[in-house]
Length: 193
Image (cartoon, rainbow, N blue to C red; front, side, top):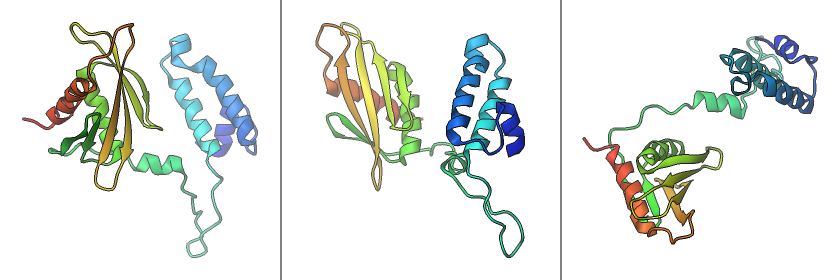
């Protein structure tokens, strides 16, 4: 797909402004999304590809040495190239404070590990990779339903997962240490035989 094809798919001119591209994409995706009409998602994928292509900067000037176009890397293209690989076989997971767990991985890999381990602790109810933050609804015998919110912060040598625990009922939440113990055990358990 080239820029001309992408513009035609969205019903725009090739030189449409980003705000116009965004408006048209949002309008079209509302009707083509598989959650709306139960289709297989092919039309939505085509719209998304067209939108991504039109939102990236136009190709740069010709390279003086080779005569080929020099693409301008964007955040989107860098992210596609930086897909994390499989997790290592052993990772250091340790408690720093009562509500903080240190994970010996870069932030993106640590977040992926936390998402995986969170399924052992409860049900993921909210996830935002851009922040990164994850909320897990936990249910323990004899305790109220509890919200565990985990925010992730990268450090030079590790990633820290900061945890907050709140009851979503009219009773007091279980102790933070006990809930974080479960998360820490689930994280470390990913690397035990």
